[in-house]
Image (cartoon, rainbow, N blue to C red; front, top):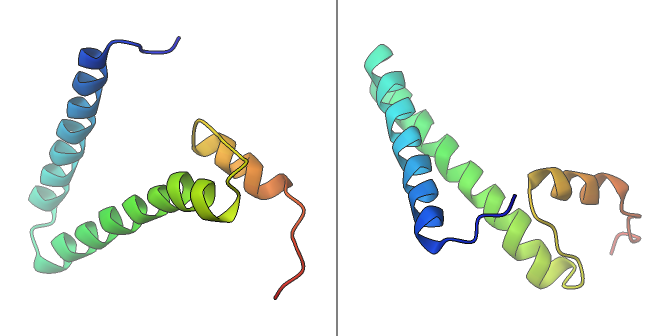
Length: 87
């Protein structure tokens, strides 16, 4: 079922942010150290960049003809594509 309501899409996005903040706060509360916070920030940043790569860079630069709807589709795309020769 696709969500078509803009309001519901924004609520869903806000819930993702709230869940991420809650999980981060609980992790830092359990292990309160600068190292934990730094590693958490790096992990969040790296996963955000990987997501950007999967859904923007690949579609706009690497293979503009291919469209996919989720990370599962991206994984299938990466694993099933014939690789061009290096260079």
